[in-house]
Image (cartoon, rainbow, N blue to C red; front, side, top):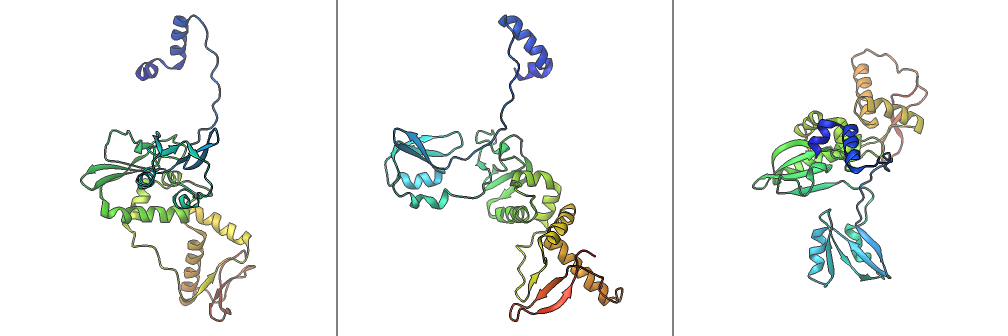
Amino acid sequence: MKYLLSSWGIEKFRSVVEQYYGKKFESCRDLPEWEFKSYLGWHEQGDFVFMLIMAEETMKKLEVLIYLNVRITPNQNKYPASMEAPHNSGWFAGGLKYNESVVIRITGCPNGCARPYMAELGLVGDGPNSYQIWLGGTPNQTSLAKTFKDKVKIQDFEKVLEPLFYHWKRKRLSKESFGDFTNRVGHEKLLELVDKWEGIPLAPTRYNLKLFADKETYESVDNLARLQDKSAHELAMEIIRNYVASIKMGKLNEPPQMSKLLLLTCPKCESPESLLLVGNS
């Protein structure tokens, strides 16, 4: 059928089917924006009973303790149904409550039954203890992922995934999902970040760098930083280094006039060590 639709197009297909049907079809209706939801947690089932949807691994641990009417869902999760209302469900809370989620799917089969090719992060087995890594699906399941790396051994997962999540956390746009971030940055740049990864940068321990005196300055620097695919902190630090280097090389005799200054303070005495950089001139 899909090949026929591709060959004929929608209008011709509709016309021919209407001839067989003998009536005109109604016009297409606009569909609401598709949203993929994870239903992990408690839900009312009706008749004063509840169901609890949880990840399969969690369910396996519980099945050895209690007998439940277990059902399987299309998302490879399980849920126990027909449970009495939970009086105290706090012991389930550890893995079920979250502020953000990433659609991750893993399978040892390349045929796609687990739908790894629509996940934000898909792991597809390509050998013993080895996986393809797919990136680029979106939370609403409306785009396909693409192969990011092949033949990644299980013991090397951290080396690949840590820099991806680290840079997503620090360089994402407002409310940008992991899948949208990987699509925006692109696989070539992400591969470069993975290849150069040397671990999470250590935070400075001697000084507390207070970069921005007010929200307006921060937003101005942040907007400039995004154009260079950097964080506001990274751009500000780059400006500081360039300014200090220029002073040392004698290119600048005195600081530029600034309406907003950045203070480098010592955490022990909380007094300004030096006045640096950039604001609005």
